[in-house]
Image 1 (cartoon, rainbow, N blue to C red):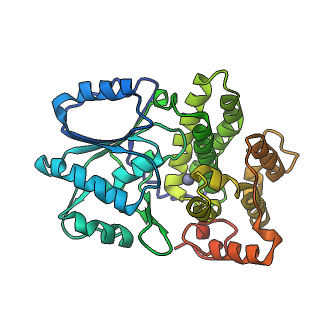
Image 2 (tube, rainbow, N blue to C red):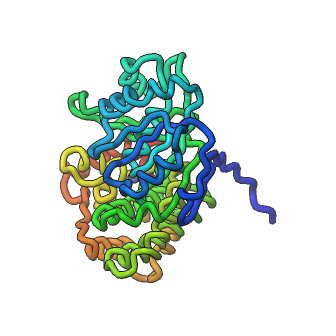
Image 3 (cartoon, rainbow, N blue to C red):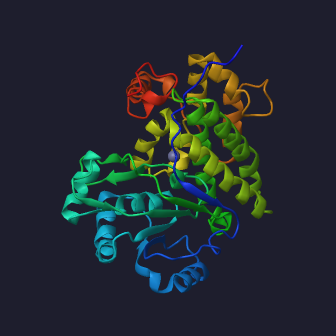
Length: 366
Ligand SMILES: [Zn+2]
């Protein structure tokens, strides 16, 4: 019997260039401005980039670390927009981790005035007059997948309480993602751990997601299995090269899956921990994964079968194996089901924008 047609609605226009040395092979023929993470770009790579860009480079700004806030993004616009205005069509190049890439996704929409920035990002609505500049993203960490998704996280720390904004214009995808695992070689191990945990969270959140489909499932399963096998090897610290290439690949695979499904419950719960306990994003997501795993298994037998394929040992409960695996990396999972206030918090987040994507959420996906 013929299988019923399944319309995936897959849409991801990002042209991906992949491979060690990909950055050094790039040809520059257009005017660019650069936004780079100062901590992530080695002096060698920065010199190389400046030399090869030469006169094509019209402006340069550094990301200096910290949460990607509305005010930080506005300051970057102030720095880069005058150069971008001089040459219409100037490409924005971003090198760094998720925060740098997310900031570039805001900067590339040049508005008439920086006074319009905050309102535009808060309402996730572009004004009538703006120029959308081409965007090339070069991740220097393996984890966020931001280079292949169309949304960016900005923190509105001027609001009381501070809130997480999701800047997600319909045409927010970059034109190109240049994924060169060599750029991740200098990433410190603790940060590499947190980034890989973010990849694992993207993969699992894509599996226990109401928008999952056979294509995202394949990408997410492969990504999860790579992280589980390779992250402990990387953290042992002997052979950094092979596991870093594998983790960079997992990050793109999970990012592609997430670009179709979005994230779910663990991400919804993570934002509080990042804001109030200052836990890095990947760590803040990972602490909720075993609980979300059990809830997903309870909610859907199809999802339970899928999750059985994440660990090689299909007999031991997956959430238990995940808890042990996380403990080996120094991460202690949390569970909201053990107290009434926790259960209240859980039910609130299951109805949130990201929580509604979770397969165990009673709420409809908007
Ligand atoms: Zn994430």
